[in-house]
Length: 206
Image (cartoon, rainbow, N blue to C red):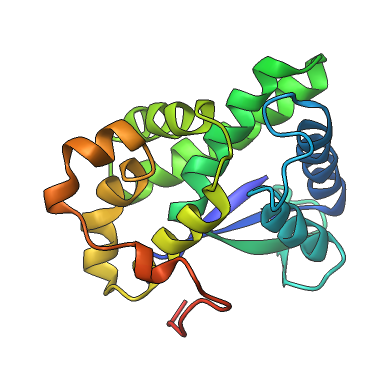
């Protein structure tokens, strides 16, 4: 898999061929169904990610080609992944893996996914990828309770910002999902509750 960072600082396009994306989908689906941390959770925060991956390999999102160093180009397919979703979703998947039987394929796909997340963060904010991965894991380990609304509210707020402010406020937005961090920094955070009841994200330039 590979990625393109968007100039808008809204997130990345995650690319893969049909086999890579199907393998990613099946892996996350297994985590969703088998992990005791998130199985049988209404409105799981991973459903939206599974939805995007499935539409990507069904050729319903973005399309491009990959050059294999002189070989014929092969088709690849991609989907948009917002920074604010990517970090805690990756953390939730990693945390959920501790509550299910695993095989080497699960681990290989997760390491590949974490490499995409870390590498893309380094492009946006050099030197911060480990801190963001640790924050995502800490948030994920607390479980998916109300994460659907809380995560969505942060993304809604995030997309209303300018590209420069998205970059500047990403650390705060991710950590605001940690109840302890949010309590300690409550005087310096926006009111996210008004963004929780939404049907669609605001229009923005990707």
